[in-house]
Structure formats: C-alpha cells, structure tokens
Length: 263
Image 1 (cartoon, one colour):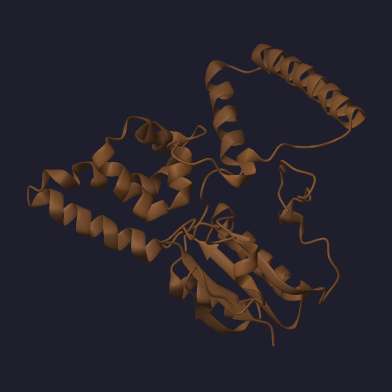
Image 2: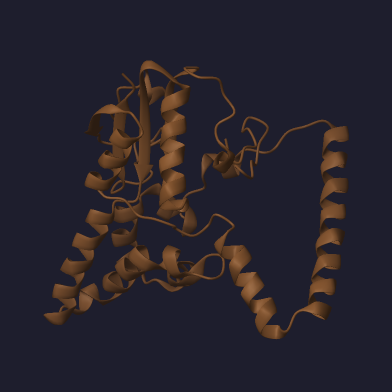
C-alpha cells in the first residue's frame, strides 16, 4: 500500500484513516521506513491497526531509522573531527543530515540531496555503509528494481491517466493563480512550507529499540524482538527480497528491524 502508488500492484491507501481490512485477516504485516513519517500518536494508532488485522500468532515487522545508532555515530564523528581527523569532516556533515535533515527540511530533498550530489568519492563508501543500496540508487550507481519496471496498461488506461494528469495540472495552476491574488508573499511561503511538511516526506518522530518496543507492547503485541535484515519469523522471508535484495545487499543495513507477535 502507498498513498501515491506507482504501479497497479500497489494499493492506494491513506493509512492515517486506518487499514481497510477486516479483523484477523493476515498472517504478517510489514512496514519499512514509514512509521517515522507519522506523528507519534498516529504511529501508535497504526501499530494498533496492524495488531487488529493480524491473525493470532501473526507477525508484524517494523523497519525504521535507528535513532540510537545515528546518535552514537554522531558522537563518534564529533570526537574524531574535534581530535583533528580531517577524514571525518565529510562524514560528520552527513551524520548531522542523517539525524536532522528529514526533520527540519522545508522542501523536497532538503540538504541531504545537495550533499549527495557534491559528496566526494572518499565519503561515498561511508554513506553506502549507512544507507545501503538506497545510497547507490540515489548516487546513480545502481538502478532500483522499481525504477526498471515500466508501468503497463492498455492504451485506454494510459490515455485516461494522461487526461487526468492534464486536468490536475490545470486545476493546480488555477489554484496557484487565485492564491497569488489573495495571499501576501509571507502567507504564500507559509502555506507552501506547511503543505510540504504535511506531504509525508519529513520525519515526524524517531525511534530507538526501547521506544519502538514500548509502542508495540502498548499496541497489544508480545514477543518483541530485534532482528537482522535477512532473518524473520515471517514464513519464506527471503523470497520477498524486501530488506535484502537478490544480490544480497541490505537496503538499510543500519536501520532498526523489530518484530512482534499477536497473541
């Protein structure tokens, strides 16, 4: 599921409205790098929804950036640059962005996108060691499976999408024109920033192993356990290639992987 799906195999769904499934419908629920994009209370509601739609003894697997790991790396980088180790200057800048950019940014990509465009080759290995194959994709070293896949459909479907996109574009231009006439420059900037902050790109909360475990217990789960990317209690986990791709590379090697069971 995704609020803005790019393929027909992905269901369009705004999970802030709840999960559109009956109670005890599924054996497993998986969420990757999404929970942190919800406000804390909304994240808690989603975990309760995950518990609701799971069958008894079903497993939920939650993947989020690991606040503890980021903080420990930041402190290490700070110690290194303060000790005069110039090789850590770029790495220090990156870890600051990893900690704060997606919380503070007011436009898409933030400072992180600019850093990746100008990062030196000596820092790329460090970045990839932290964010895995996602880093390779962003820096153009590897094309993701999703990017390689074309969106297929009949000519009628493609034409319908084009017509819808055209009217959406016209509608947006009309709105921009009217708002420009009504709002002051500062009000227009505030609206733009506010709409971006609510778009889903920014991080609204961060988790470590303690806080995520506590949230899962509060949602009704038990047997909460931290897992490696390549192992899971979900049956035939390796077949899905979700946290580890077919080449064996981890999509987010230093993320926090937590599983829990509905009893």
